Length: 469
Ligand SMILES: [Zn+2]
Image (cartoon, rainbow, N blue to C red; front, top):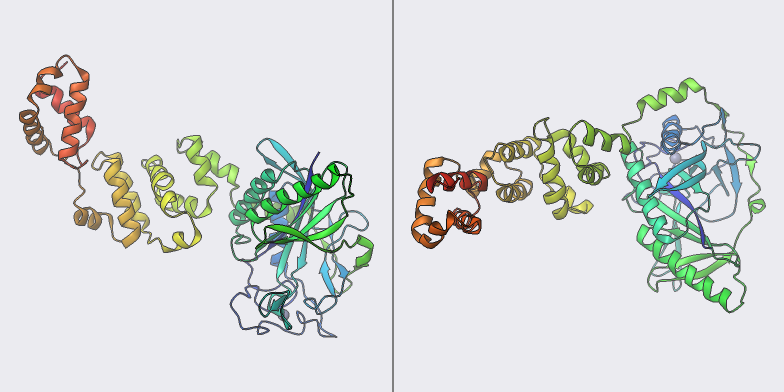
């Protein structure tokens, strides 16, 4: 049986400062080594001061995943030598004598399967190595410490995944969860990185290190399972090692023999006092947490009467569920949900496209009201919506520029229907006995009005005009 476990590194990108100093947590786009101080550069004599907000945010993730938070939370030094780690140790958490990490033993359910969380720990991100050109050919490696000390949450699962598809679904659920909590923007470059541990029956465990995209981790795991299975089938031992995902060649390559825990010589971090977490503190934190995705979905279904499938799609996308929450009224909720999930999500499905949308909440609400009140057909509604988010104009402006308003006044509609009757005499004669003929006439009216007539009103008038019962 294939077994997969994950270690996910998630930056707390919504924090203002780093984990142990006042440098900016958002290091992206800054000139190299401009966002550093003696603490994050690891200069002798500097002392770390713990960012309390980071502890709270990490605790929120732990609570959202159903983890236990211990009464005493402490930090450890993980020793290893690498140029991106200026102190030669990383301040992290470690369960040496019972759990002292911020979270342990949680559960996440995906498609009816429970994935157990082993541990959640808060730690500092190392700096970054920058290669001139490709890492194999270059003579020069540069190091940028801007990232060093960025608050990072490591989430470790039990090896409960049976296939790479479950991994991808889990990662999407996790990304939605941290985004909804408002602790991280998982779609920022490098904000969420994944290590996968994978073994097949009869083989050793292999670690695939530091894959930056969910699609790639799925591909890397699939490749690795095939590779290991073919070794086992040929009775060649699978070596326990760390491998890298080569994105260009779409294969994993051997990186180094895997370190064992004892190689890291974990030591208690004596510069940071133990945090005593009272039950009261945890309850306070729970109260500050936003509505969970499951609660949100439930509210959409039970309070607003939105169909379950639409509620599922809407609640799992933070951008669109926020838009929905700001836009709908009690009477137009279903229609706003409809417009967003069927018309808007299809056009703007990426970050970039979402950021380009010019959104006027009132205009979207007005548009939904017009559809609910039969002043606009759904078809015209879609056209109007796309124009609204392209231009940022108000609803009335869009309707008048596009000339979309329904042919709703009865006299105009009767006149148009009269014209159709003259053109389609045969259908009118048949209409009394043949429902298809009636539908045909409705279709002709819709065509003549370019879809702006309300089909049900049109049908009523036709029936009255030729006195069909
Ligand atoms: Zn600093």
